[in-house]
Length: 124
Image 1 (cartoon, one colour):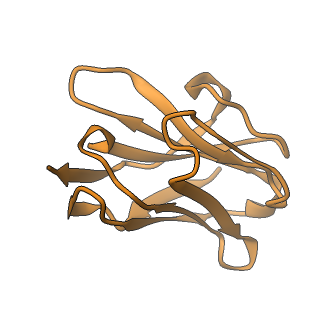
Image 2 (cartoon, rainbow, N blue to C red):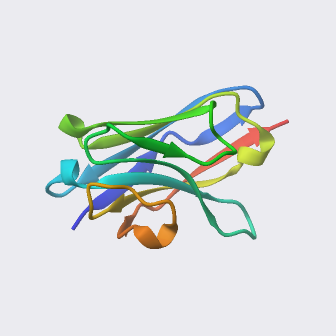
């Protein structure tokens, strides 16, 4: 069992940056692949980024490539999402997710545990 708590969301102007954190409790964080997803009002939960269990491989949605960076610190049981050059269309609730596998997935169905989400709002 893994509990996930996101933090770091907020209101930022277009072109600005935010860094999201996701703290995990429970055992064996280093054996879980991790992902970030987002959900805008009236839309589905979309893949943003993922990282495998040892941090050696990452994947990004095309819409965020070159602007967002996912990373993890297994010693701190934490995964991060650095978001730069933010756009109004990045506005959404951002969710952290854990997958009981060393290898990440790119759909919400691939993940077993979810955080409560953190709101990111980008003003134009």
